[in-house]
Image (cartoon, rainbow, N blue to C red; front, side):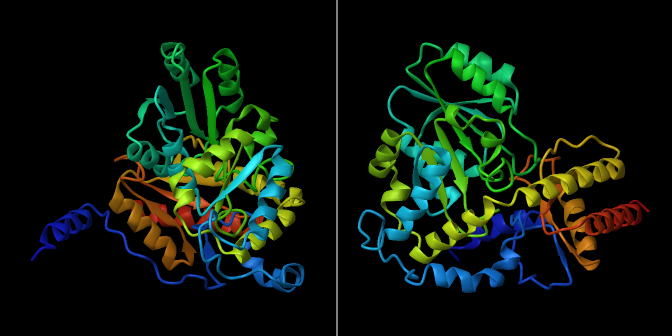
Length: 381
């Protein structure tokens, strides 16, 4: 059978507790969902918005029917790009997803005499972009500006160094030292600074534009990627950058050129959501408050410091079987969580990843912490 070698690989995954399946629908309103990237709770409220949305965007089509370079339907895409451009003070280009954006942008950036200097924990989409482009890249220790500084000094005479990082890391929930990295950028004129704000867009900054906005650093970032499928409760992604670079990506980013464009109705929905997000300062503060409370609770339960400084909080399990077992026990008690296993995290770093949402109240947070404590105590017994 020609499939037998593939079967062996799957059997190996199963033996290592790494076999994955697509879960069934888990939108039961009685359950507590800590798996979703709907950080502002907008996805759960979409029914409340539909009447106003269709009144505002009555002509939005369900299909673009072609790539952006060929489609006749452009108005909603351009309107969304213009909205984001006005917010960031940069030119903006839409992509179909954060994965498409990172793969396509990195592939396009990889021209002769380019070296990429990457935080060790960047997302798989960035790594795939580097691998597909056969790029020359070096990795620096996670969030370690001294490690990055050594590489920058090594390549100071190189024509072009692209420093690649995330602002909030999706598995640890920790923050990049953006201020320190911007200071390094000022010392080395050959740097292009590339920051993925996937998990910060909507949740950080006075208008929800991300950690760069919160720290007043938007102007210092050359390539800023944001995702619309998380806090914005939509789908797609965008890059905010210099006008020349937008034109370059339109002409050279294969994932942009050769993909059917997002449906116009999706672009309109993203614009509608972003307009709502801009005024959700109260929700962002509440999300930060409950996240801090939850992180401290996890530290008390585990007896270990937690690196999270965001709405993503990990609980280290130590191996894949334990992560699966803890997640299953929490599920029985009505709490849905994600067991994260290798290769998403390194061996020994298997964990439960808790994603908090602004629509959770303090009582929910305390109930979840109480249940986690009970499950872990039973597990140890």
